[in-house]
Structure formats: structure tokens, C-alpha cells
Image (cartoon, rainbow, N blue to C red; front, side):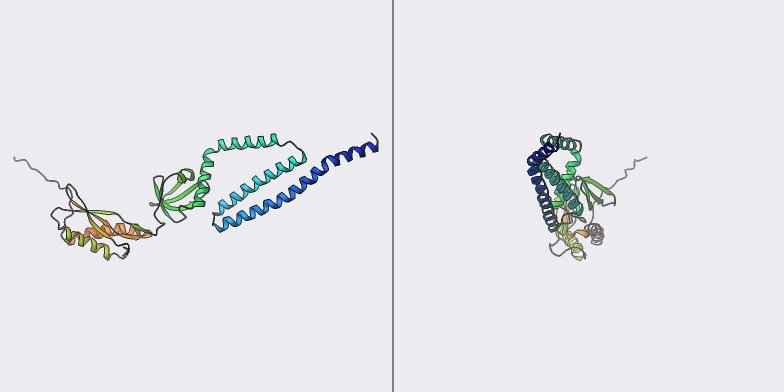
Length: 270
């Protein structure tokens, strides 16, 4: 093959693929610039909304790779390479990975929802999935709590985001629900005054909302009173234990009987 034919063939290739190649290069340059702009805007948005650092990095990397794969497919298609089978392969691969990691992806999605909607934050006392504790860490797949007995509780984010969550810290105050029973011979007004005195004299019981003492029920062997002091969330257990102890002491000092089972010894005559 002489030089003239080589030049003719080269010219044909340039005329055929040159415009496509130039278009592909321009698409790659513009597309790369657009990806950077999108990622930059996404980062600013997540920073404004105070997303968790681990979530920001994960989402940024995930979206970055997704956009780059789309850009590569578009560039290959512009050059003239068949991308249908390539896209089908990626879709099949993604489906296989999704099925294999179904539980993990559910936990990841739950973690994303928790970090976006923020039903709780680190340091909050919550109750969820039958567990109660202070939130220690919010990770992509799990949330760690420190239980009330100082045990570590790990809850998958998938089940956590789909279940009921009780946040005891959000409002800043909590009501302590206590019930005390006294004997039927006790004076109701006197008993209520003694119980209220315990509440109003405790330094951690709030004035507003005001504490309350009400007759709850006439039980089989006692008159039960609903005692409802309010306190800061951090003082809940202090108020719970101290009010219980001080109530026993105050009722004893006022000669108000707290009923309890008695055992009567019956002696047989000889």
C-alpha cells in the first residue's frame, strides 16, 4: 500500500472520528467542570444543614462516582462505542450487590434518614426498639447508646428509623410519675399536704410546670396518690430516687401508715 492510500485512509478516519473525538473531549472537559460545581454546591448545602461528617464524605464520594460513571458512558457513546451492553452490565452488577447487601443498605438508608431529619442527637436520652440509653454515636449503619447501667447498646439504623422513638431530652424537662399508697385510716388532705411539701422543698423539682398530687385510686388495701413532679431531663433519676426516699421519711414523721402485707402467726392450742 503506497503513501497516497495511507494518507487517504488517515484522512477518512479523521473525517469520520475527528468530530466525534473533539466532541467527546469537549463533553469530558465540560462534564468534569459540571461535576465539580455540583459537588461543591452539595458540600455547601450539607455544611449549612450541619450533616454528620461521615455522612457528608460518604454521600460526596457516592455522588461523585455516580456522576463520573454517567459522564464516561456519555463520552464513550459520543465517540461511537456501543454503551447499551455496558450500561446493562452496570445495572446487573448494581442489582446483584443490592440483593446481597439488602440488610446493610436498609441500615444505610436508615442512617441517612436519621442524620437528615435528626430525631435525636448525641447526648440525648432516647427509648427505641425496647432499649433506653443516652446516644453515644450515630454511625452510617448503627447507632450506639450508653444504657442506664453503663452498658453499650448497638441498634441497626434500619429498624431504628422505622420504629417508634421516644426522645426524653428534646423538651428539656421531664415529668416524674410516682405512685404512693397509704392506709385507709389516713387523712386524705393531710397526706396530700405532706406529699406536696416533699415536692416543693426539693431543690431540683421545678416550680413551672407546677408539681401535682392527686388521689389516683382506692385500691384493695391502700389509697394511692399520683405524685407528679417536673424536673430537668438530666435530674430525672436524682428526683425519682430522692423524692421516693424523702416521701417515706415524711410519711413516717407524720404518722401516716404505708400499708404492707402482715403475717399473722396462728398458734395451735396444745
